[in-house]
Image 1 (spheres, one colour):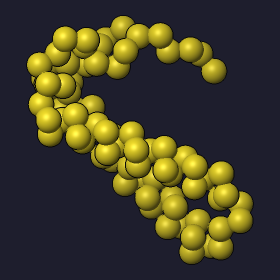
Image 2 (cartoon, helix red, strand yellow):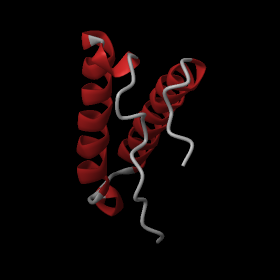
Image 3 (cartoon, helix red, strand yellow):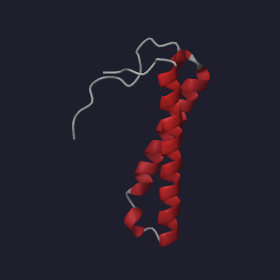
Image 4 (cartoon, one colour):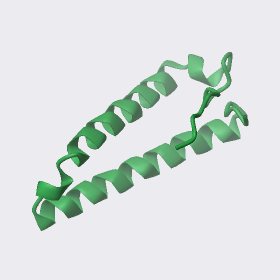
Length: 80
C-alpha cells in the first residue's frame, strides 16, 4: 500500500479549532479503531453478527463521508 505523508486537514484551519468538530473527529477515529479491532474476529461471527458488523461499518463510512464533505465545503481539506 502507498504511504500517505500529507495531513488530511489544513494545519492551521479554522474549522478544527471548534470543540464540536474536534469531538466529532475524535469519535470517528475512536469508533473506527474499535470496529477495526472487532473486524479481526469477523470469521468467527455468526451470520447475524456479520450483517450487524457490516451495517456498523457502513454507518461509520457514512459518518466519515459527511465529516469530510463538511470540511471540503469549508475548504479545510488538504488537497495534497
